[in-house]
Length: 99
Image (tube, rainbow, N blue to C red; front, side, top):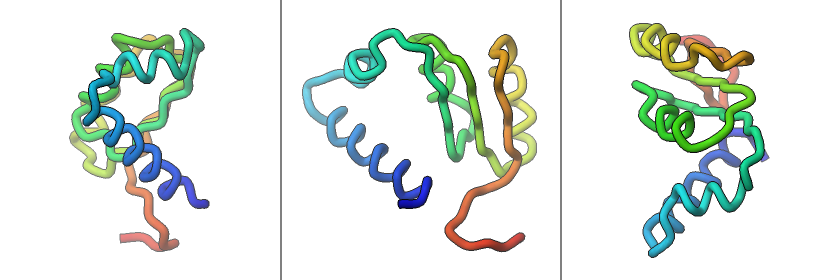
């Protein structure tokens, strides 16, 4: 299974669970049980979910993928203080090509 398909399935599962009575924060905290996490955000945009994760979890590494250059530059401030972090200024696809 490709990374993108795995991410989509995880996103669908979390969205389904969020729509129920369990809060996302509580659900994810139970799953990670205060462990340091590696956070991968594909399509980070302005980093709203990154802010949520930083406030609620111990972060070991962050990998953000954001194809819009101006947004990618703004994200640099949000990952300050996280030792192993990287912003990739490109999009992911199921096709091997450049645009």
